[in-house]
Amino acid sequence: MLSYSRTNIHDAIVSLEPQMHYICKVSGATGLSLSVVSGGEEAYAKHLGFRDVEGQNTPDGDTTYFIGSVTKGMVAALVGMLAEEGKLGWSTRVASLLPELQDTFEGRGSQITIADLLFHRTGVARSDAIWISRAGNILLPKSEGIRTWAAQPVVRDFSTDFLYNNYAYDVVGRIIEIVEQ
Image (tube, rainbow, N blue to C red):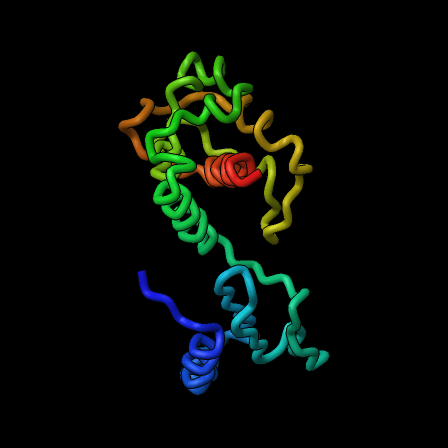
């Protein structure tokens, strides 16, 4: 495994700042916040553009961005890191960490694996309108997420058919929290 000091990381990313500005310009991004953490400490942080274009307010560490499905790659990467550490596996059965799912989904709840969630192959109906608004705001409290997902009907074959389901990533996020406690 390669090892870099925070100073080396910081300097390397600073050298890329002109490209970051260029990408923001050509993509039409109004703002960007980037933070790189190494060894549990922030090695680099930069906020570009505006969080509010009309008010010309610059972004900061508290700025919230709607990044949508970009989070899926981040969640999968975290699962991979936990798998490398031996804390979780792609074939880990979800009900072993979330027992409330054991007897759900017409008996399939005990069979669903982390990979099934990440690959959208649970067969559970899509339910975005229940928990997320068109503007991307979460409509349900976090404590209701698993229960609400478990109440959705099964509409496709388990472990073979693809059926896009954002909720599955919420479940994986919950599992990551449990494993990291």
